[in-house]
Image (spheres, rainbow, N blue to C red):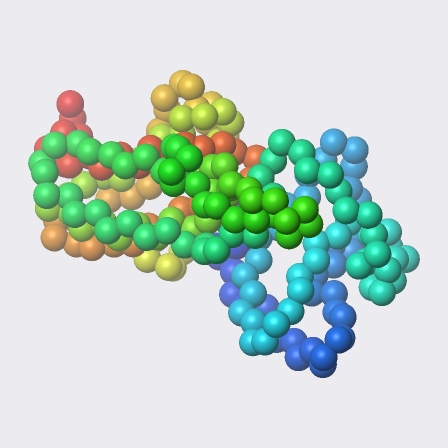
Length: 221
């Protein structure tokens, strides 16, 4: 999940396609890479669409014809979130006026999780943890302020991006277990500066996470 998210945040638009009415096309093919028992395949992609289309995610054999995909069996629901949700971005505007440490919590409760529907069963569903959702967090600091990330649930390996530019692993090495209260430093915002942090919950990790803001006057405490 960490590597997938890092590559997504570092990526650039890949291709353009023009489909005729009723035409079918493979947008992505994982190729000859083996998918072993107990392994997970992850993907995160953006689509900009003009007109009405249907997107299907399918696990197929190498010799499966594209015309066969729409007739394949539908997988039963399991414990993981599945569905179509109305938006992909959540925006925060953080003004750090205080000279004391502060924090915000992302992905903590049901009131924050997106609601949508399962296009296969037509049931309502909830994106528990907000997987795939981008948090766009604009932060303005009163004094030099360090920004830390503290996962609070299970194994965590992620990636973030500053100012829609370069992506960084978080943590740079290894992983965190949420219950041990360790944190990784994401960067420093200078006094009077405004910067934008982009965060997404990685596949294979769990929410919530805490973003902590530590003013320079508290760095040695």
